[in-house]
Image (cartoon, rainbow, N blue to C red; front, side, top):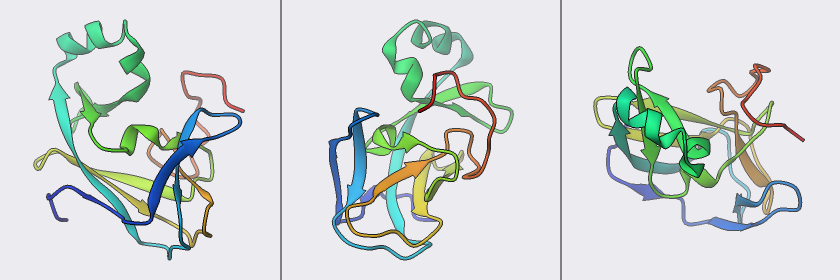
Amino acid sequence: MSSQPYRHPSLYVRQTQARGRGVFSKTGLKAGTVLEVAPVIVMSSKERLHIDQTVLHDYIFEWGERSLQCAMALGWVPLFNHKVGSNCAYEMDFKKAIIRVLTVVDVKADEELFINYNGDPDSTKKVWFKTK
């Protein structure tokens, strides 16, 4: 996996009716398309206690082999909305301190791109906010 920052040229951000901003693609994309490779800022569990008291809590990822740290992804990763049965997934590379987002199914032009915040596109595990 490349560790150089990258964003697919067809991506764009726009307001959605129900979820605030979201990430979309101007073109159709095949399953397995890399959408973004984003560096992360890794923080300790002690620092997370402070972050959890702010709006940034909703945008961080648990980080590390035992999830003892957290990370803030740079780029557009924080703008991907959550959905069970998502059309994208993310992969974390702890050594390179990056997150990679890729499609897991073919997507149509102008379709919103979703990740499942639990890591598995089909996970039904509850998240910390009310879902639509």
